[in-house]
Figure 1 (cartoon, one colour):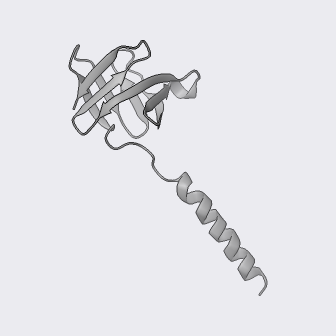
Figure 2: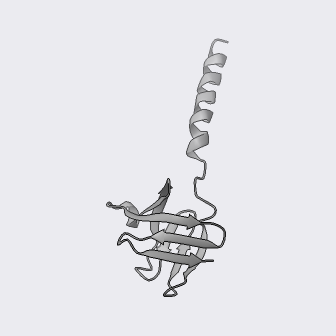
Figure 3: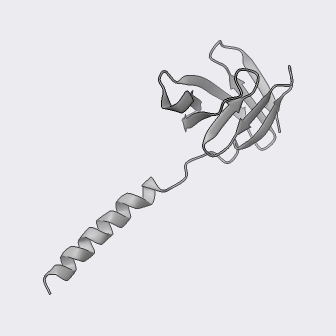
Length: 106
């Protein structure tokens, strides 16, 4: 009889810990297939991968922190940083690591 409260406390703590761990944190405005206005390059962003086809067609892992997208190939360091200037449902502007601004449309 004394074990039931202990089991309940452990189950509640496990639920509290697993809830944010399983939550998807991707920005739904970023997800999609984007086309550059300047040179026609393609940018494909899914929930887990970031592919800029003019650099390399290999998908990279990414995460968003604030207004910056950090990408890495297969988890390797250092991260490549892309600063988000503007994002909405139809337009995306990124500042690349070499400080060039690229405008994309969906």
